[in-house]
Length: 414
Image (cartoon, rainbow, N blue to C red; front, side):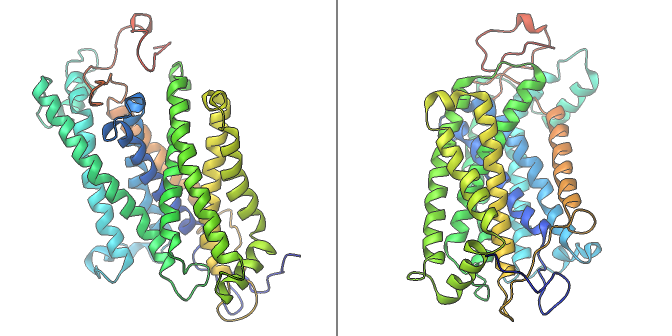
């Protein structure tokens, strides 16, 4: 039978100080890293079939990257003093100071990569006679470099490859350090595990693939495009590979924490009370492992199912839900394991106000608005060179009926 918690949030000997915003922070930072990995599959690893998704994934990653600090700011008890992260930076002892340095480095690198990816497309936009405002903005985004000759395109390609390679390392560092913070806390039995940083990185890749897939479906639906099933199938293959690795690590973690013969006594005791017989049973076994990992693996097992648009969209949503539940189980579980008494510290869900569902939705709303802004500013619909994924042609301004039928994503409407 589930144990009844007797210590409540805000009363008793202990409190769960890290709430929904801290649950959401590693989820958003994971989406940043995972989306960036998808963007590099064509830019760095030669997966040309996924080239049409690279601009979408890069824009998604950048929008989420700018939104990620809002979760930390929203969790702060004194948000007006956030500037002290810069004025009183304690490196390398402060995790937040390290986060700020990594975040700034990541923003600068992504600005350089986005510039190189979209420079040629922006150069082509400067010739738009019917849209003077957007043509002027595009000219500004080129920083005065408007050449579209072979040499300029090769230079852009080199910049993209270098920034993509460095960006993967920073992306893993940006998200992996969050898992390191949890794993290094020896005072919390359920956090003190060397597997947590690796679990965070792998699940980040899983969530990023799922997010890009959903974004592709939504954008194609909005623009009236015919979805390329070959792209969907290959993206699902990458998702299956990441899910298998994620499932393996989950099973190792379950073995090392939930089996008495292999787990430290305190770790096993709290894992059993919270996950086997306690309030996190459903969020862990049903939502995180069952619906978030096992069901998608089974549902995407055959080639026919992997090419199914409806099946892929549903499974991608389940994967995102499972990854968010993983963050919930880590953040909530570590705090629900009491350090002072033998009781479970409850971790209530707040719907409105400080550190609530309302604030979480607000952060995602900001990320969505930033994505729409960047999608308006940048020529992500541009055609791509099969050799390097660098934009070459301006977005079509002719009716859709005159567009090439061989394009990876063909518009059926204006």
